[in-house]
Length: 117
Length: 109
Image (cartoon, rainbow over all chains, first blue to last red; front, side, top):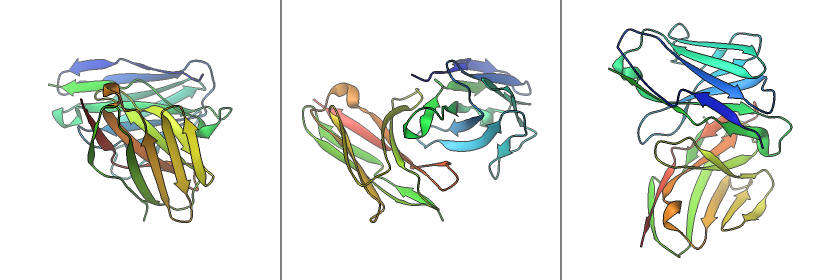
């Protein structure tokens, strides 16, 4: 089945530094990937839609200069949290669509727990 | 506006049956998903319904009524490992997923 690999699974960084999270589709090509953020006891919140070869589409209220998304190939999207602050601490999850699969083809990465100290 | 409603929390007994309801209002409809999410982990796919009716998959079943904007997830023969959050999500006309807040299911022995 479709597999999405997300790294790192857990990262602790100092306030003011940048963190890069990678999302890879391992056995399919993903023209579109999605980045979500989830705070404790809350549902997934879509941050942005990453499109291969073009600019990402950000949801309202998400700062595109702070959350840099790059989707340079059909199997890799990266999210960089720039100048991280403690309020950016959250669970970040990527998702990719394998259009050859049934059921909409949404597969999730394992998530990245970011803690900014 | 778009909205997904599901109960915040439910409690059930090991070995019993539980039904988690979800009502939705979306701009267009291209199917409804149920995902299971254990604490600290990413969601895992359970089911997808796009036509009215019941889809059965082992101990889990999912039902959809498009005319009523309603779905439920039915879990049978509950096991302790079923303790998790269950997320209802609809795919709108733009094929974007609209997520409910999730239902935390607590299983007691």
